Length: 152
Length: 433
Image (cartoon, rainbow over all chains, first blue to last red; front, side, top):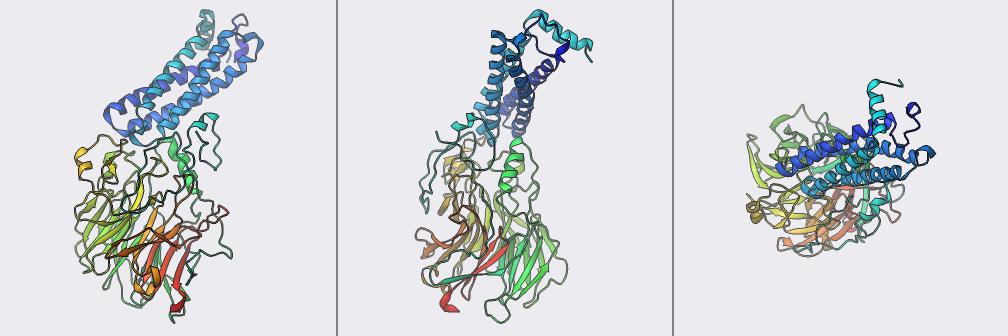
C-alpha cells in the first residue's frame, strides 16, 4: 500500500488508488461508446450496457473519492493539486450519479442528456487521473512500482 | 423545486433535491376530453408505494343503502372472478411475469414496488365459492382447479369454461353445479408469454360465444426492452373459440387489463393502463369501446395524437391513425377490473360500468385504490365517476386492500377481488336482502 511510497513524492496516488482510477476510466469510456451506439441505432440494449458501465465506473470512482478525501487530511499530501484532484473526482462522482438516474429513464428519454453527461464524466475522470499522476516522479513511482510488483 | 416524492427509505445525496415533481393533487382528469399537462421528466419518478396494513374491524366504504361483506378470505392473490349460472363464483388466483432485470434500476424499483403488494405466493388456481341457500354467506370455499399458470381472465360459454393463463388459453368442461374440474384443461392456443412484463391475460367471450377476446399487455413501460419484445403485445386478440385460430382485433392498447361486452350489444369494452414516467397527470388510464382494427396509440402516441418522444424510431403514420379513447379514468389509477351494471344494483348505480382501480405508485399523492362507477346514458359514459367502494387506503396512510377484478351478479351484487388482503368482497343494496 501507500506505506511503500517515497515520502518525497507528495502527490502520488497510492497503488490501490492508482488501480481504482485505472479501473474507472475504461468503464466510463465504455459507457460513452454505448451511449453513442444507442444514439445512432435506437437499440435499447446499448442503453442497458451504458447503465451498467456507468454504475461500475461509479463504484471505482467512489472508492477513489474516499481515498482522495483521506489524502486531503494527510499532512504530507496536502496541497492545491490534491484539492483540485479531490474536487475533480467529486464532480465525476456527482455527475456520474446524476447520469445513472438519467440512464434509469425509459427508452429514448435517456437522450440527449445521458450522452452529454457520459462525455463530461469521461473528460473529468480523465483529467482527475491525469492530475493524480502528473508529477513525473510520482507517476513513475506509482505505476512502475505497481508493474514491478513491489510491496506485495 | 420541491423535495423528491419518496417516503420509502432510499438514501440519496442532496443533488436529488432538484428532481421531485412536487405536489400533485388529483386533477379530476375524467371523461372524454381530459386536460393533458406538459410532459415532465425528473431524475426520479415521484413515488408513493402502498404501506400495507390489516383490515381488523374496518371495512371498505360503500354508499348509503349498500352493505359490504367479505365472502372469502385467505386466498392466494385473487385477481379476477367469474359468476357461474347457479350463482357460484370462481376466483382466479396467481401472480405471473418473468421479466429479467436488465438495468440497475430494475433491482431498485422492483424491491420498492414489491413493498406495496402482498407477500403471499400466488395460488395458480381457481377457487369456487358457493352460497347454497342464498343467505349471502358463501359457506363453501373449495379448489376448482389447480396447477394453472397465473390464471387471470375467465369466461363461460355454454359448457366450456375458458381460462386465460399467462402463457395459454385453456378450456375446461363445465356443467352447472360442478365444484371441481373433471380433469386437466385442454389447450386452445398459446398466448404471447416471453418476458411477460405485463403478464395478465384478460378474457371476454362474444355474446354468441363464437369468439374469445384476449387482452395482452406490452412488454415494457415504453419500449425500453426493445421493439422485438413487443411483437404480439399491447393488443387484443380475437380467438376462434372452436379452433384457437387468432388474429389481432385491436392494437396500440398498452395494457388492456380487463375486457367485457356491453349487455345487449356486440361492443367490446376494455380498461387500459397507460404509460408511466411522464409526470403525475400523464397519461390517463382509460375505459373505451374497442373498435375492430383500431389502433390506440401505444407506443408512439397517447390519448390520440400526443407523440411520446421516448419512442424511436417514431412513426408519424401510426400517430395520425391513433384513436382517442372514450373515457379517461385519471392518470396512474391502474384500472384492473371492468363490469357493466344491472338495474338490480339500484339507484344511481343501475346503468353504467364498475371499474376496479388497483391504485397508483407513480405519483406522490395516491389515486385509485377504489372501485368507481362510471354512469352511462344511451349506452355511452355520461358523467364523472362516482366512488362505489373506497376506503382501501385509510386516512392514516395505510393501505388495507387493493381492488382488482369486479363482477356484477344480476341478482344485485358487486363482487370485488382484493389482491392485497387476499379477500373477495361482495357489495349489495340493503333493500334487496
